[in-house]
Length: 114
Length: 113
Image (tube, rainbow over all chains, first blue to last red):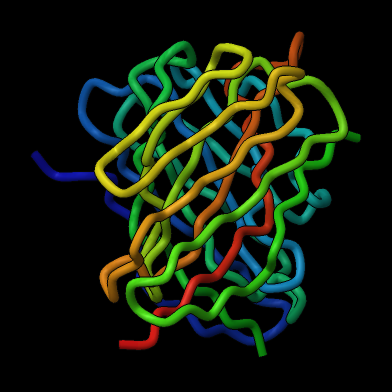
């Protein structure tokens, strides 16, 4: 089975541009998580969904960040406008329900904003 | 807000030596998980501990959950070069949203052959 799929794997963009990160969770998993990883702040939970509904978005840093999950097999994280401090690795993870323990992480998208 | 602290931040060992990383929470946890991230890779789930005082083993890895459920440790016996990576603990707060894992900043392990 394919694991969590993220695209693109690398993104380099200029400050002010819109960035869209994409995630396809493991088939059958109904909980999806977006994380951001930096050296300074470590791994931070941004938002998570259960059955396509956002449950907790308290980790979203500011209004420039938005996330959607239009169906069970696709989610996007959008940054508009992007800033250099948004440079990080963004991970998507999924589980077969919130009560299930193990989170399966995707390979991540390395975002560089210049 | 809740914090999960991990020490040490870095650990360099000679192959064959033991390694331990410690995790401390400012609040009581309902459970704690451990993940490993290889250089350039993504976090991979290792184990979850739920009960007070619980000890679990996976080959050379031993995981403990404190009696007060506020601390945990991961011990690796006789490290190998394949153990290289960053080890993260992640906890869920009592009464908190079940999906809201709070990650420690990790301990980066390097092993010299």
